[in-house]
Length: 85
Image (cartoon, rainbow, N blue to C red; front, side):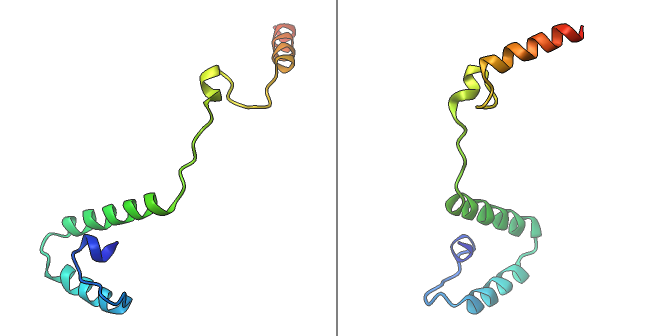
């Protein structure tokens, strides 16, 4: 991903060679913010490709934030609150 975003040729996949070319490219740049933005984009795109995103179940739309909460617990909670008052 780094070789693609920084437009470095990577024919053999030699990490040391890519590192040297990247170092030369970064030393030649005057504005470091451009390099930081490219690194940020590289890290973000790599994470999106490799890490799984958890999807939340649709139970939050029903008003239940926890799956083990039952109607019996709801009644007991309301009764406890009423007795406390």
